[in-house]
Length: 150
Image (cartoon, rainbow, N blue to C red; front, top):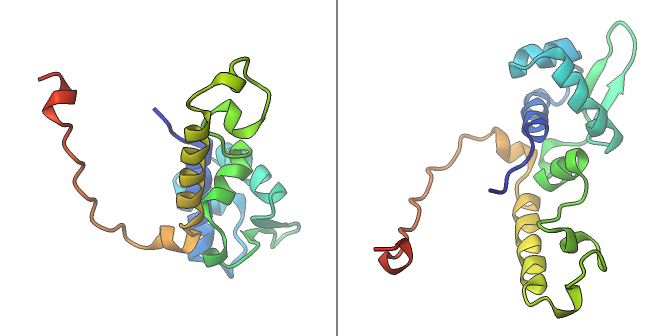
């Protein structure tokens, strides 16, 4: 199963709290309360988000954090990459020459294509869009009987 890490998920929660109040500077404690997370967890996700330039930190009595850019300008691919590094469905999606069968591999090109589709999907969703109520979920396609073992 493909999934983002729990910290990346928490990072999106923290960022949506900041996006909802993008002109405000919020302390890590305020963010933890609003996000329903523990303060150490919030502190842990804020570091890489700040290093990636997605949030700005301010010191002092009125210090805290705010988004570095408008929520509509921050895509989910930036969040994932800030937390997990470059997006790669497989190791060979990121680096040439890391696999012993790369020269004869029949699926690498397709994994690269899938990697691009996933990156484009994440790039197409902004933090501002994450604040909107979700659209109704489409029904999943049924698995054909011949593939389901019937």
